[in-house]
Length: 129
Image (cartoon, rainbow, N blue to C red; front, side, top):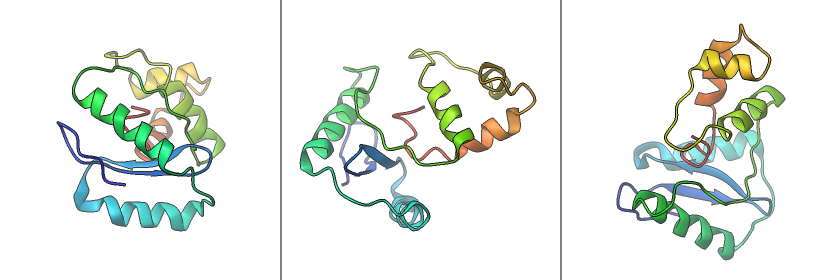
């Protein structure tokens, strides 16, 4: 589903578990979703309710009326990637962390480049910044 906001028009996809894909740039969104679906092979559909909720929360964040998403997520990746994404979710709104800091926080001090790779593979950027 394409979601019109004040800032951009992201493509959002959901499964029966939660939001599984969000692309912020329309030029590669559909290809990115197709590639993600080919790799992850999700099944089921959460239906319109979750899509409507995701769209509303995206609009609220874009308009500055919301700082944190409250959406179920269906994050698919390696155990390492999921660990990094979970740590990303612990960063308070408006704060930043280096890849090195994130690596140390997950007990992998020398893995800052791998943390960067996991961050780049994040299928729901902006929801999990």
